[in-house]
Length: 130
Length: 452
Image (tube, rainbow over all chains, first blue to last red; front, side, top):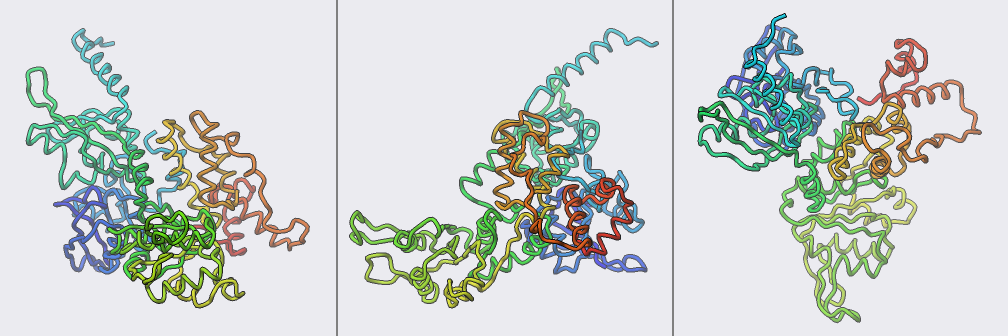
């Protein structure tokens, strides 16, 4: 399985839509096998989703991501962990330990977003900050 | 109890005053210390970013603002480095709900009374309305303007770049108000022709003779009042894309002319003696079933197959009910901005009614319903009383006198309840007075497909 993390220096890039680099990890039952840095070619959602698909990515861990971008990537059957922050190595460990849902890895105001936990979002009647 | 010293008390009062002043400003304002950590965050900043002050203070400003320039060209960093303020720079942020918002940013240094550097201040303003209007005026819609999480639409997103790159003729089928023109514009804006014009013509609005002069133009003297040459839509769309909307409405005579234009890639303006070559990509749209019309002999088969290189079928809104809350949110944001109102959303009761309606006019009708509600609703939530009455009377999916099996009736009832509850299974089970596992079993047994 290939897990991609959008990165800036040694952290998860804050905004995936504008990020330029992707760290792609190959992980199997025995743990991490291989890692490679990939340059993201475009900021266009469809073409970016298409590049992830061509790289064979199964899971994307990223910072803030716009709805159209997430929709385009999900349409390629890529599972997205959105609104994640933290040092890359910590995030990788948290992902492998199933702890990515912890508050420490969520961008401010985004706790409970995505990961199948974001039910009720965009209903117009609910705002996470109220 | 320990009392505050007068000096301490004065400091607290001054800080409260500052917060009150900051909160009264309509623009978002936050300050950072020299380590880029937020030290104050006003009410408008909370509203624009959807991050509470409690969560924002103490955090790195990039994590809170989530702007596209934070890592590549941070405005605050530039100001701290150069000492020069930045005024009204346009950037995009992503709010805590995943909405991309255009904002205008200004920055300045923050110094104490002795001139010592404390940090910096950033003010920002949501310019979605201006952007929205600019888009509407220039019709620069892209794929990102299509709001959906429906699986059929998401599948279309997947193939849209390939369709756009191909340059082939595309046929878009869908009921009125399903967004055919929006898709056509998105294809154009994704294609290599995007720098050239996108031109649309609606065939149903024009009689044959007018349509011909609209499409192909005319030469001076072609008819009375034709004093000078007039370029047609084909000429205007040269090197770009021409959307021929409601193509199912054109007469057989016009079908022959259009077929020739598509086959030979040339056309003749009215009154011209020579043909003109064109380089125009054609996108045809219709709310009719062209395949059926062709089979019945009402539409030329040769023209049908000429335009049907690739067909996109847009689902009606009643088949993508999961998009209704998203679309309502979108229209509320738009009308709030345009009408300077502050409608917060839709009450549960109103949402339940909106989820049960079948929208024969599709997204356009939903937009009209929200616009209607905006006239009556002065603030807070849109309630049932703000909705137009006609949407309360559900048209039955079948003839009421027709006898259906008990199983079908139960399946229909269950489906209606699920729709009313915005596909929330727990809520539906509670409303129907059954256990959630019973509901899940019934959903499975009736083969009801839930939106993903």
